[in-house]
Length: 66
Image (tube, rainbow, N blue to C red; front, side, top):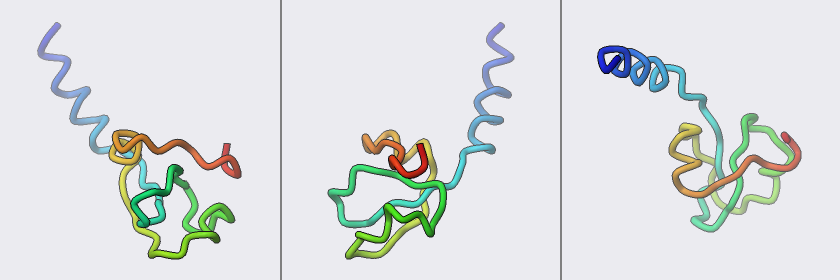
């Protein structure tokens, strides 16, 4: 059963979705669309990251994209 774990892990890393966050350091949300209206309040730059990284940082999905 262990030999199956590595291919599954690699597959999940390859399909990690791109999301966008406000780079203020305090923004609690992530966004699938770089033009989401939830990002319009960002006074810092918007940066691209992965969904996994955003969730690790404690970010949750924007309510406009829920």
